[in-house]
Image (cartoon, rainbow, N blue to C red; front, side):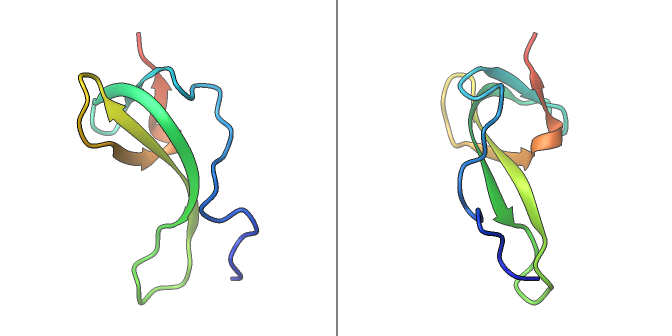
Amino acid sequence: MATPHDANTEVPHALLGRPVRDIASGTEGTLMAVLVENTAAADQPERWADIAYIRPAGGGVELTTAVANVQAAR
């Protein structure tokens, strides 16, 4: 598969800059960005996905998760 035209660029998301929860890890924080990234291992065929970057509440290193795992924090 050819590299998507918008690879490694930011994707709009309704929750950008807002409090969110990663349902996979339970982490809550601020949704900082959603990017289109190749998630395949180096020796595997390309696999493109929307990846969310969440900065934990209180700061720290941003974690990544599938954008489908992101929901508004309550």
